[in-house]
Image (cartoon, rainbow, N blue to C red; front, side, top):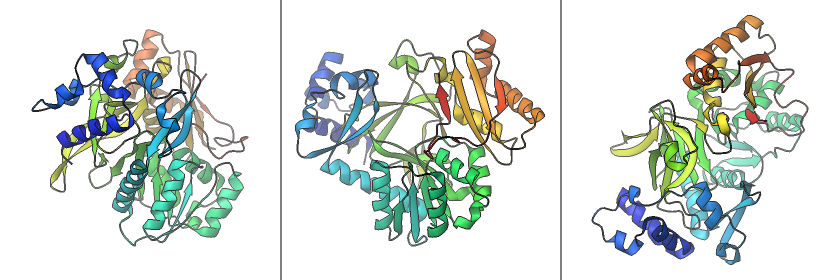
Length: 415
């Protein structure tokens, strides 16, 4: 779909499911959509950005008319700054497109007929349920493991089923590997990741522990608001966006005057426009995810939007934590280790990096600390300015998530 067609289609769909959008645009920029549609070349930049503040005022409301419609589905996700849980709506066409694009991406990753079985180990919800359907459409036997189950049950199911494909989150896979004596016995041939950032060093280390090549661990990127957004192409060494999406990179200060500029000129906040999404205002939707080197590239004879990596998330509530990239910290730390996991805690002006590795000596921890300070400019600058105190790199006790009943755990958290 051509870029101009994507935008025009997005505007047409907005009227059908979000009549407030037209009035909001007029109030924001003083122009009507009908007037703008007559322009020979309507540019994305002519339309206002769909920020989190706008969504809270217009979409994440108790009186959203979509809630009363019988032809839409809704999914609850994490809360807004006002304390409400977000309701994300899907039309019937949205549901079909969600599956269709996910199927395209999985087929691109896995090929046709090369794998026979899959397990989704990431919890319950829209992403998990649709992944099972997609695997089955690819002719594979598929089942899921609830993340609430004790880690022992995860290991038992993997050992019993021996899935050729594992669909999971990096933190869950970390927990599985750390609890396993030999993860190669599960027979996993390909891993599809979702939900969290995965650094190149982490992928290399994880592939070695599973006994597979790093090119058999494929990261995907998506959200409940948009659906599947991109996947990492090992052939091209970059994330490729799915069809029907327009991508822009904007500066944080364009979103909120309180957000500080990004130090790396290659980084920008990803903004998306979907030509297919109906029951969500995906027109210049601000993801608040920071990507590096966003640019089009030629793929199979046509231009595809791409980026090199997703490094962090920004937002007015993260304070100085918005500058901290778990992607970069993990990538630096794991270069010094042959196994293990990394977690980060940001408390007030302290940054504590926990290294979960049974034999990580103090000398290695000091080298990791030095490299984090020297190789991640944002962190070095924050230390010099006094925003952050001295970094602590310490060995974690046991394994990440030990003491919790859930196999899920965060890689970075704030206090």
